[in-house]
Amino acid sequence: MNIESILQGCLKNDRKAQYALYQTFAPKMLGVCSRYCHTEEEAEDIMMEGFMKVFQKLDQYQKKNDSSLYSWIRSIMVNQSIDHFRSHKRQYEAEVAIEAEEVAILSEDITTRLDAEHILRIMEGLPEKQRIIFNLREIEGYEFEEIAEKLQEPINTVRVHLFRARQWLQKRIRKEENHNG
Image (cartoon, rainbow, N blue to C red; front, side, top):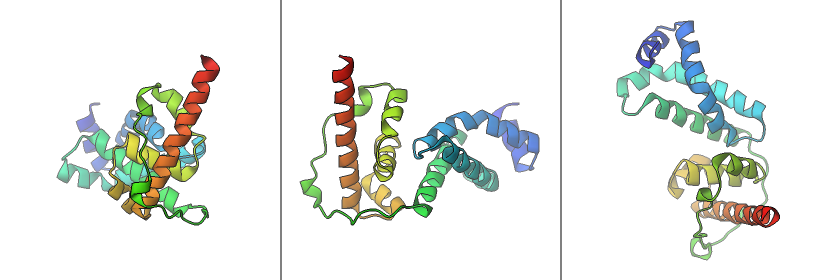
C-alpha cells in the first residue's frame, strides 16, 4: 500500500489502513514525543492520543494538504506533547523576573557537537520545562513568541529557561568531554 491509498482507506475508517498509517509513522513519532517526556510509557501515551487526533482530523489534512503528511502528523505530536505538559504542569518555583537584555544567549550551538542520540540521552536530565523549551526552540525551530504562547508563559521566562537549559547542557557536555578526553 502506498501512502495515498493508506490515506484514502483511513478516511473511510478502514482499520487496516489506520494500522498501516500507524505502522508507517509510529517509530518516528515516538521519537518526537519522547523528547518531551520523562518515561517511554508517557511518550507512548502521548503518541497514542496524537494518533487518535490524526485519525479524527485526517479529513482536514486532505482538504488543506499544504504540507507533507509526515510534517502534519509531527505537528500534531508536538502539540499533543505540549498539551500534555500543560495539563500535567507541576508546581514550579516562583517565576524568575529577568529582563530579556540581561539574558545573554550562549553563542555556541551545542546541537552540532554531538550525535542526536547522545544529545537526547543528555537532555533527559534537564528539568521538564527547560527540556520542552529547548526542544521547541532548538529542535523544532519555534520562535520565542510562539513558545510563550503555546506554554502560556511570559516570553522572558521562556528565554530564561532556554538560557538555563543551554548552560546546563554545555556544562554536561564539557564534563563528558573532559571525562572521555
